[in-house]
Length: 283
Image (cartoon, rainbow, N blue to C red; front, side, top):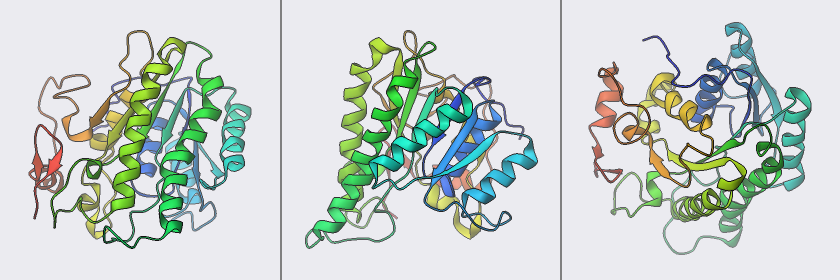
């Protein structure tokens, strides 16, 4: 179906961290298609421009579509690297209107609840909480300008209570740090409202299921909610909320005037949603 962004982001600039692949790549493309100039950050910049997995590919894809995405290498464990990325965006585009904290640590291996190393815990907190905090801290002086801006933090359904054997279970460092990020989001949503900045968190849902067999995330399904969040401003916008992608158009965001078209993989993925709480049924 034709991509119809719910908000026009023309004239704005955004940063998306962890944008070289997966959901971060989709968010960067969605924001750029909605009119924003996007600085995409990741650890992997160089690569084959025809193979997904590096910012080089993302920039090449954007160029072919006639939209604006540029690359910046960032180490989320390094505060100086994060601050430099924000400075690069402002220097390159003259402004910063939206920050998408998507980069993450701790989703590649499952762990038992006990016996996790201090290094693993430390890296999880340093990226998933402190790294995002440093991005917010560096971005705020620029987001306050020109009528405010938006911060969107990526959370997970795994931050909610889970059952043994469920897909959301088995990633304790990821779940705990994302729960902390949710609280940071709600706290800053209150703190930054007077400056015109909206701070919200969104869980993408079971994107891994959809992406089996090399399929890329559907840009209408995952991208439209992000564009909507990136356009939020105070007063009038909403802030300090934790929302779920699969509830977009039903419980938050603009209501659909007609049921959106979904492919078979999305329909099957959504069949696992246990509404209205955002858990996924054990399979």
